Amino acid sequence: MCPVPHTPALLVIDMQNALVAIAHQGAGTVARIAALQERARASGVPVVTVQHQDDELEPGTEGWRIAPALAPVPGEPVVPKSSPDSFLDTGLDATLRDMGVTEVVVTGFATEICVESTARRALSLRYDVVLVADAHTTSLRPGPGPDSGPYAAPEASIAHHNEIYRNLRFPGRRVRVLRTAEVDFTAAPAGPAGPAGTADRAGAVTGRPAGPTAA
Image (tube, rainbow, N blue to C red; front, side):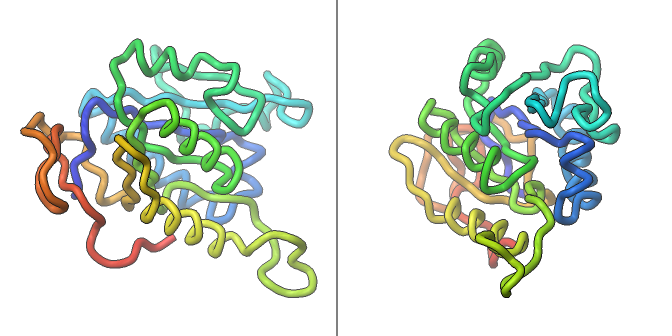
């Protein structure tokens, strides 16, 4: 496992009933995020749930509700939003800063919309970012061909965004792409950052995990 620099928070974006129902590998994504939630809670790492609302996801409706397997536990913050950016006109930034969070571990739906918008904004707000390669997903749609419309197939979109974040350089920020199994919330404080592959200021192993990251 690759330890996650403290102080992290696990961010679960828009894993709501109506969206999970149309998600590529929805059940598997839910299971992986649930495993991350369990490990985060066991390590005392905050879990923050983001919940979208609009005309198609009206508050109080069944589709708007968080998938039962990912329901927040009492006392955990739930941040409502109405745009792809989980920070825009919401209390997310204040919530994270009040908890002393310096890094967000990003999961959820949809890869190229709310996940991407939120991860990129987090970097602009000076958070470090871990994109969990196999714990974000997008909507089901046809693969390449005459019926595919303007969108890439889900697997291609997920892999594309994982690769972007593997190679993204943001001044003063640490950006990593890890699989669910590689995320370790138990990192202890350590010394300052060293060369790739050594411990960083929070005891994390820097650099990429070995081998390609599967979507």
